[in-house]
Length: 211
Ligand code: BEZ
Figure 1 (cartoon, helix red, strand yellow):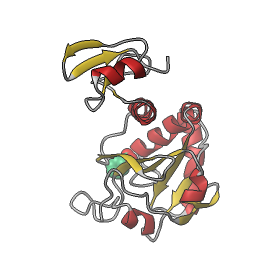
Figure 2 (tube, helix red, strand yellow):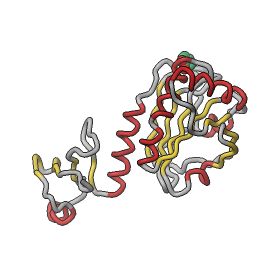
Figure 3 (cartoon, protein in one colour):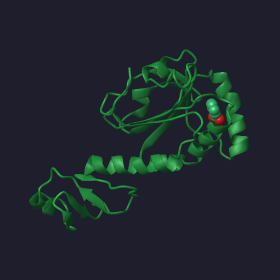
Figure 4 (cartoon, protein in one colour):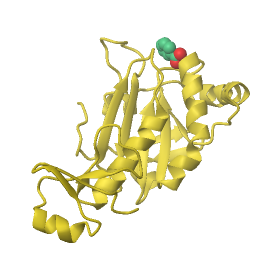
């Protein structure tokens, strides 16, 4: 069954390159990213795992734990980690789940049979501290993901979870945001002491509240 925004992220227990992991216990009270890639020892995946390893401090700064997954066995993950370090200049520094029986891949609908009936596509799930799914993205095997974009979205998710704002197109942390339509002008004046600009009754812009 597919997983939709707002659904509880299904819990599971699996082996990873950093030992056994129970998803909900692993995430604790923090945020998480669970992402699948098609296969070990493949070129695009190698670049992706190197990039995520380099970005780990950025995920940590945001209180986000990262978990990768493929349907290859743990022994392959460990052997492949050497190649990632050698070719990408970064050692694999987050857990990579082994899912040879495709239990998690099935639970999270990561295998799209009309794309490939054996391997996982490039799925991404961002999970909030309430263990609910906040974002899903799916890329095909042929296209490596942009993990800077993932960090940008996490910034938006974390901001909009705290304040009555939404973030406009191409927004980046520190830029002006939008007052959500459900807040009246009167309440907006109280909630946003820096003020807001009313471009249209439905389009009100305010400086990022936590800056
Ligand atoms: C890759 O990671 O390079 C890849 C994996 C599966 C199909 C195509 C490319």
